[in-house]
Image 1: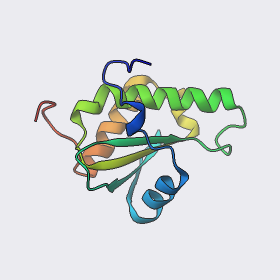
Image 2: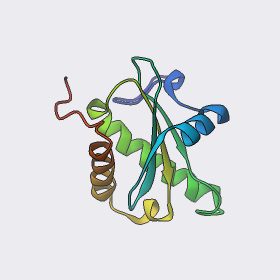
Image 3: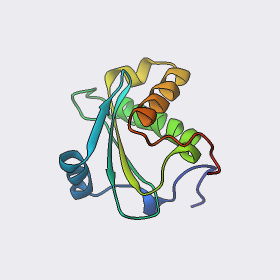
Image 4: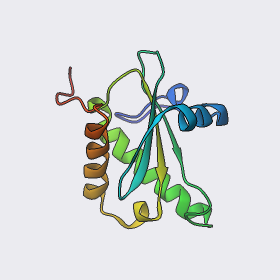
Length: 124
């Protein structure tokens, strides 16, 4: 399957529960209005990203998957501005489903800046 533009290949996605737990316990966290961003240095030259939305947010799998798709879209747009060598986890919240796409993008940029992980130039 061909990856879309600015999207991570499947081998750079975090899917193992142990990875999520390690980042949750030993990483940094920043909470925005739209989602929670958790990061941890991975000692690699690549970016690895995981997405999660709990059943507490919404019981419907369709709605939880929609939240994850929205988060994936925001990350795909801002991927060139993210620092390499980190694992990122985006935890969806109820507000993720109803906030505008521009607000989601602004929140993600804000989180990256607060954690000193936003590259001002995409090519650097």
